[in-house]
Image (cartoon, rainbow, N blue to C red):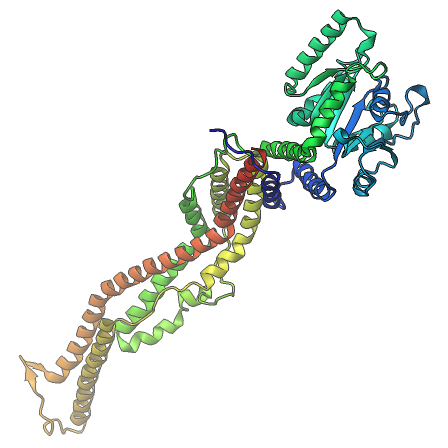
Length: 528
């Protein structure tokens, strides 16, 4: 079953979406062409359904004679007497309302002639354009301007120059997408005998077919004798009565604009529908190293070990920790929005980050058109420039995890203080014995013994030795906890780095890829 033709409104909506997606993304000349199509469509649709037909041709093709024959009077002076102002002439069929006048004002055609009412052609606005091969540049520019605005184009060729490369390469071949709103007329056939005329028509038909204009009608006429004029008028009457010429021209323009934009889409939209984030893990790894995550995790481990050994070590030696600064405090971490004291990434780390970003960009750009790959490159460079500050702020404000003192460390610390008290009691006892002995009162205070060892000596030695053993036993446990906390901090830091990678690199690049898919889908909808 044949799929229904998309309406002009749907095509314009799709083309507008493609332009909006590409705006600020792509720097390609085809966007200006598409914007011009939208502007033309907005203006043309507001000017009614009159049919504007332009006669275009080269010098000497008999275009003005044909225009006068269709107009029924000498409106445009042919031959050497023709004005050289480069201004088009117009003949209007229909009632004297202001619709055609507004349309001609928009076309900027000042020379106008109103034809007597003729039902078959009412609503026709016929233009006689300047010669497209005029020696005057302004004439050629006027032809180019009006060729882009009229609804139907009638190219008038003559037997001598019908195969001229200038008209075929500059006008006819580029209008292959407009075959449905184009007529080609071989004029002045009265100058040829029948075999020569048939040969010219056959050769011209072959040229048009090879240029993609197989659907374009080819007529043989003579503006001077009127040969074929009724058939040409019939073609014009058919288009006027259908009241669709303006819409068909706009549809052709939209399709041509979309076809030009399609050059910036892969064939078959090969990049669409890919999932996943290729290279994301490698990028996070590179950014983690560049951000100093290994340095921070090592500092967390050393700081946790320092604090843990201080809590479980001899109480009288805990003050020695203050002789060295906390490794984490030296890095100025935990300050959201502030800067850390981490060393800047070296050349090796920076090169690894650049390589990872490039690999992500190339993976996402695989299958995209060059213009979108250029946009990916620009987006990646912008994100890469922001990474240094973003990474430093992320690490500075990262939550390194709870720093709760484990219950066993509290118990070990309390036991150390108890052992210290025991040793202190023994030391005081021994000191008291020394004082009493000095005054020869040592018999006053009894000296208990345990297995022959004086109890004060046992208290001092036992307390100190037990404290030392407890500290040695706790050290591996403190180191184990330090490593666990460092791993936990590393995971949190990596998550913070991953958020930076997502915000500054992956999300913007993925957005470009999705915009490319939206752009190509909209272009395809406009061109179908």
